[in-house]
Picture: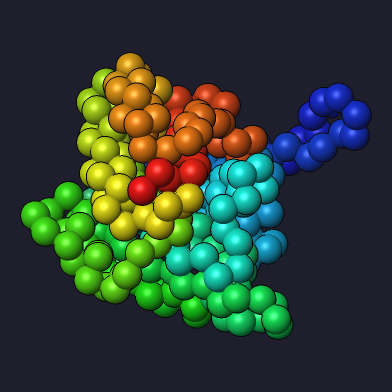
Length: 234
Ligand SMILES: C[S@@+](CC[C@H](N)C(=O)[O-])C[C@H]1O[C@@H](n2cnc3c(N)ncnc32)[C@H](O)[C@@H]1O
C-alpha cells in the first residue's frame, strides 16, 4: 500500500493507493482502495458505528426528523447494525436523555447481528411466509417509523437487482401500512431502474408526502436512493 498526495480543491489530502497483489483480483484491489479513501468509512470507525450506512439514516433524519425521543422503530435489514445504533441514540432507547420519552427499536435481518444495547433483534427472512406476522407479534403494537435498508446480494445484473430490491421495498411498505400509527414515517432504500415509480404511486395514496432522496453518504456512483414517506394517513 502506498500513500500519495492528491491535489484536490482546497487542502491537499492523503490518498491511499493500493498496489495490486498476486492472487488478488483487480475488483478487490479497487474495492479496498475505495474503502481506504472513503471519509465515511473512517468516520464510522472513529465514531463507533458498525458501517458507513449509519450516516445515510443520520442524514435522512437530519432532514426529515422522524427518529424523535419515544419513537417506536422497526428496522428491516438491520445487519450489521449501523441504523439501529443511530436510532438508539435519537429515540432515546437507553433513556440517556433525561426528561425525554424512551423509544424502542426492533431490528430484523437474514443474518445474525451482534447485540446492540437498547434494541431487540431477530434473525428472519422478511420474505418468508408469515414473516410480517412474526414481526407484528414481536412488536406487540404499532410503530411510528418503519425503515428498510434491505438489499439482496448483488447479482451483477442491474435490472434483476432493481426488481429484487423493489420486491423487498413493497413487502416493507405493506407491512408499514399494517403497523404504522397515523402520522408515521416509512423510509426505504430503492435502486433506480423504473419500478420505483409504482411504489411511489402506492405510497402517495397512503402518506401525505412522498419523496426520493439521495443523502450525501450514498455513493454517487450507485443507483441507490431512498424513498421517504411521511404523514401516514392510517
Ligand atoms: C445494506 S445492509 C443493511 C445495513 C444496515 N442498515 C446497517 O446500517 O448496518 C442490507 C441488509 O439487508 C438484509 N436483507 C436482505 N434481504 C433480506 C430479507 N429477505 N430479510 C431480511 N433481511 C434481508 C441483508 O442481510 C443485509 O444485512
